[in-house]
Amino acid sequence: MGWLGIDDTDHINGGCTTHTLYQLISNLPPQFTYQNPRLVRLWPYAAQRTRGNAAVAIEIITDDNEEELIQFLEDWWNKKILPLKDNISTSKDYQRKQYPTDPGMVWFNRQPKDDFYWSAVTKEVNKQEVPKADFSWGGHGVIGASAAVIWPGLNHTFEAISWRTSESITGRKKRKIDMSALAVVDNDPETFMSRDIRSNNILIAPRGNCPVLFGIRAKTMAAAEKNCQLLLDAANTEQAEGHIVFRTNQATDDHLSDDKTDVVTKTSILKRGTVVIETNNNGKLLAFAESGKIKHLSQWLEKGDKIEFNGLKSPDGSIHLEKIRVLIATPKRKRPLCHDCQVTMKSMGKNQPVRCPKCRRISQTLWLEIERIPPSKDWLQPPIDARRHLSKPLDWN
Ligand SMILES: [Zn+2]
Image (cartoon, rainbow, N blue to C red; front, side, top):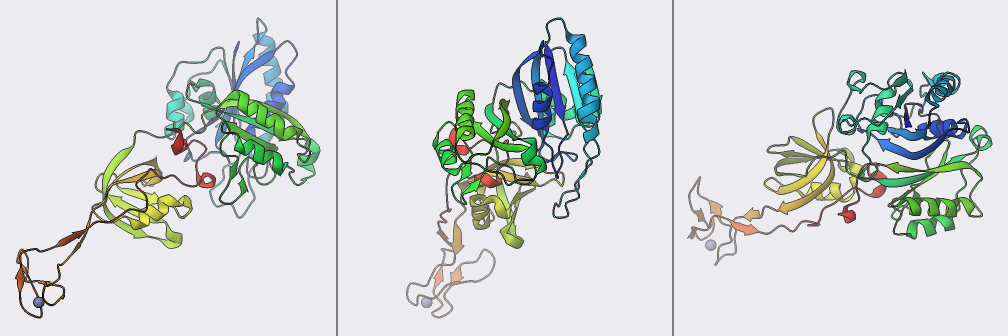
């Protein structure tokens, strides 16, 4: 028995690491069986991350045939996975710097007890930090492959992934998913993030030339399996090659540390409404144009407001907000009006009383405080189509 991990086989123009794993286990010699497939998302800022930054792992039952399995893996690696190396995107509309694929595969006789997963989901890690596998193939991908094996998996959700047939992929046929069945799937309270009701965007299917037909995210394995089958059986869904239910770290918030509180010192609004919030102790926080209610609240914030928030520190040091709420809204200050003239009193100088410019009446009330009501006092999160795979929906807490 042992664990197989794979990563870094997909790129912008095609391929998907989940499909690489599916093809491998579909071709396992019959004496081997498998269990516990898992799909693990890693630190979203990793420089060489793949499109979805997901790695996969699976437990394979070998009995006493480990040597035979290793021979099969070695052959499969050379024939099917190694040729995927050095694929690189040619898409001009993709902004992030692309690295050539550098697949990795690992085999661990037993799952290591190690903190490596926590490093790989919260920060940049390099190959030297990867715990030594019993067998290891390839390059940069061994990082994610090992993290997927080592993931403790206690805090988890599930995703049923189905793949398209090779004719649909090579023929670049338009993806066909039965929309009325999808509505049923989306209404099941055990599934999540299937469809964005706001925009009616389908969130279960990738765009472009990806072998994945769809992925159904669910809180339980049974709900993932049932809804995947429902969608596959529906009249207007295309023929699939197969499907697997993965245990995953999606919607767990594993990438985040504890919530932080701070006081706003300044805000500035950039193009498209992105907001930079400067704080006393946590530097700059960024609320992106796509972040919906987070952006709107951030535009409303003023110096002195006390906020609670969470997000990841990006490589430039700013924290990209994933949730925020207002704890204390600092009141607006206004000079009082003169009782007689209804004219705004004016300051007579620092620490001096205020005076009516018309009748010269003097007042010791220097300021009136006016309460500011935030657009929301609850925790806010970006809309689901702008949220990270790792982010836990607020209403689950
Ligand atoms: Zn007056």
